[in-house]
Length: 104
Image 1: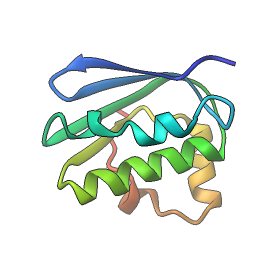
Image 2: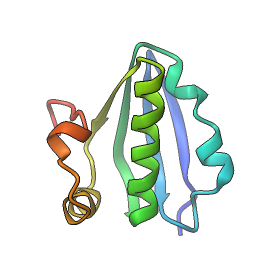
Image 3: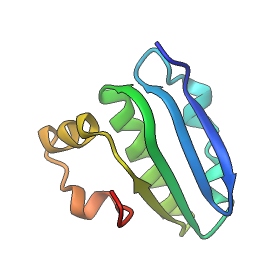
Image 4: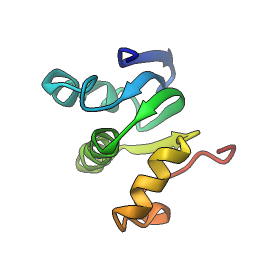
């Protein structure tokens, strides 16, 4: 298990590092969403996500809902295939739900 960290790289860019799983996502993770309003456009780079499960997908959906309510654009970069597969299994249309960075 790899601890979840969200690393501020500046200018609205954040690196998500570690696992996006039930065991790494807690109430504090879900409650600490202020970083998502640090710019009008937020990029979340998921290239260093090691393991994920449905809790990771739920957290991404929470990030989307929160940013939409704050009129902030969130862009996901390098979403792990495992998360994309979970989204597809959950009948989420990734073209409407997730804004992907061009180099994904």
